[in-house]
Length: 368
Ligand SMILES: [Fe+2]
Image 1 (tube, helix red, strand yellow):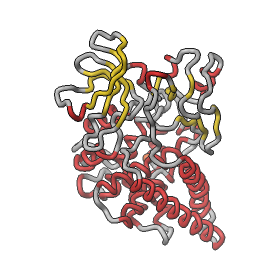
Image 2 (image 1 turned 120 degrees about the vertical axis):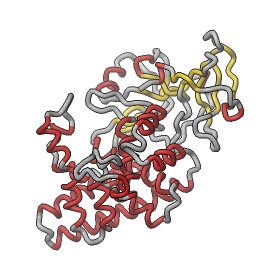
Image 3 (image 1 turned 90 degrees about the vertical axis):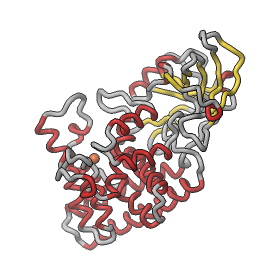
């Protein structure tokens, strides 16, 4: 299986993985042959890359970081939970509202235990590009992804499970305040005006105000919502906190938040691939992000996920076929083209054992 840009599809290619919506419903099944009239539909849903199965990529497996059923359950929990917590705030904490919010918190906690268990069982580096999805609600999907990245980063920090779960909850609820931001601003195509930007920025305080009043939620969780846009050099918002004035949990959530934001398509901004997302974090390390957390994050994610087409610095081209667990940036490559771009009979090259070879260019047909 390999990842191709949708514009580069050729008639006769077959889907290697199904295309799903947020509810886990299959929109296009695995094995479906791509035909011309499907392509505009997929583009309309913002699907820019697809996994295809062909001879050259046979046997390359793309493993999901958390099982699809758990992802669907988690999205359902987030959707209901955001609503319950927001209603509670608006209805001035009546008894029914409080019971609903307690139920929501309990289901969040249950989903987390399952996510953390799945992450600790799964030895693969995180690859949230492993399934092609059509997102109907960006905020809920983003909340789930940030939570998965933040849980993994918290585990990488060696924190006890109780703290990992608190960070996961903080990450899942970090954008709760966006429920109050008009959808037309969140989905606006193009730059926001100064006034619109000020409204969007209020989501940190609004989320904090809701969360700090719920006694089952630790204050540190509420601070993830309050501080996830603070930056270590003091240029963030809402309070312009610096360095250690920012809670460690919020530092973890901000790294996860930015990585998921840039690796997903946004209004007028195409998504970048994982290695480019990591470059963005490194470019901001010590000014925007805590350098230690960025370094640890590198270990959490599949920088070059299997299925990606890459070029080596000697000119050879191939498809990433396997992770190298000890060296995230040096996977095994299935070479398909030689130094002068002629097709060769495919063979595997382990970059972990070849220190002189570098991954130089990720080929255009794999770029999102
Ligand atoms: Fe945010």
